[in-house]
Amino acid sequence: MAEPGKPVTDTTGIREVIIGFLDMKPQTTIEGSIVVKCGDTALMHYHWALKGTGPDGGLVEMDMRGTEIVRKRAGGS
Image (cartoon, rainbow, N blue to C red; front, side, top):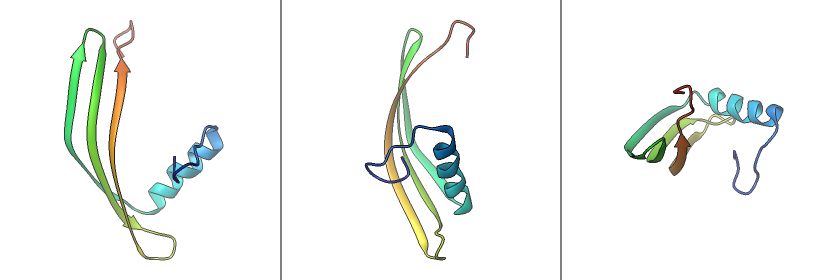
């Protein structure tokens, strides 16, 4: 989601969002990554921050806390 409340679900939209982030020449930091494993499933929690340059040349700052649940596949990936 590049903007709050505006999810992107198709390949073209996702590509445009990623290109927009890369165009900002961002510098990111990830802090406090926590991983809790249970069998082949894991809960991951992290905080990241991003600083970059917007299309107008101004400073762009983003901050997010994320949580993901992931599962290891039979092949190990």
